[in-house]
Length: 373
Ligand SMILES: NC(=O)c1ccc[n+]([C@@H]2O[C@H](COP(=O)([O-])OP(=O)(O)OC[C@H]3O[C@@H](n4cnc5c(N)ncnc54)[C@H](OP(=O)(O)O)[C@@H]3O)[C@@H](O)[C@H]2O)c1
Image 1 (cartoon, rainbow, N blue to C red):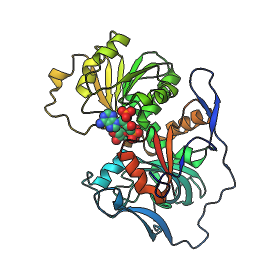
Image 2 (cartoon, helix red, strand yellow; image 1 turned 90 degrees about the vertical axis):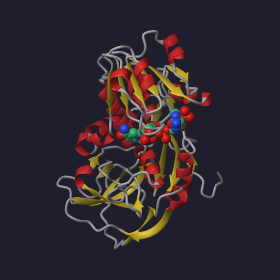
Image 3 (cartoon, rainbow, N blue to C red; image 1 turned 135 degrees about the vertical axis):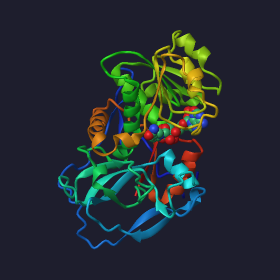
Image 4 (tube, rainbow, N blue to C red; image 1 turned 45 degrees about the vertical axis):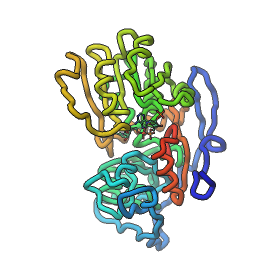
């Protein structure tokens, strides 16, 4: 990838750094950004903004940078000055035309962080720092790939933090999904257990590993690429398993003869039936990812779910708005304290959005991709 159209920066140097390595997990410290005195109210007469508009179903070239009108504020909706947006595979699927309800042209982006430019919210004032995920953002209405986004008030999650925007932007969808999936599995800090994460190098997998390591869980995770083992270890994974596309039984049973108590399956449909076999009898499998596709042909629940084994799922729409706000604030505090990692692979500018989608589609990332408008 050349410099023109390539990523803005390889993340790491200059934006934060390794501060200590006291318990086997890297601890990160971040330079603070101003936390007060911000007034983001649109006092200037700004009428247009830059946005990455998906003009039709197809490849990354469908994402066009355009000058478009700033959305007009209306009752129940507030205008957010977007400071950063995490990229997601669901946006990639939408761009390809696999979200039947989405009509083009559309500004994609199911999450963003920023400041309130014009608030109609009952308690949040102009300048408040907020995050938002899901709720048909970037699908039914324009999303985070823009300088401004008009969002329903009930999606707004206030965030107190001094983290840099690119770090904050990496957290909402990824960490809320990881936390939600662990919650569905019934994993808490109050008990110990064995957790297998399938698709461990996905940004959601790395976030789940951070949380589980913080709980003191014994954690294993899979990758198809040996070169990514180190990333898993740094995220807090105790045992790295190589996934050769075959059932994992041998390597897993060498590690845990009875099987794991919990499996978080992000690969999804290609591995779910195998996961149900691998988890210890009575254990729980949570499907939260679809890296391998959406449907399991000929799935026979009675035959393929061992008696007593539990199957659950998590959808991040359940942790949008007020449901997710306290969880996200807790994650932010853990990142600030250096206990969780933001797992950022690269930061792109809005101009490089097509290159960012190509990078994601080619599975080149190990961690979260962020775009800054
Ligand atoms: N339930 C929800 O609400 C929710 C929310 C957010 C995301 N998700 C889903 O969760 C999954 C992970 O999302 P993410 O953003 O964390 O992904 P990501 O960071 O883009 O994941 C990238 C990694 O996934 C692995 N991978 C890709 N295709 C694979 C395949 N066919 N089989 C096995 N591994 C594959 C590769 O790792 P290796 O090269 O190391 O094998 C790749 O580097 C996605 O399916 C996403 O749509 C669900």
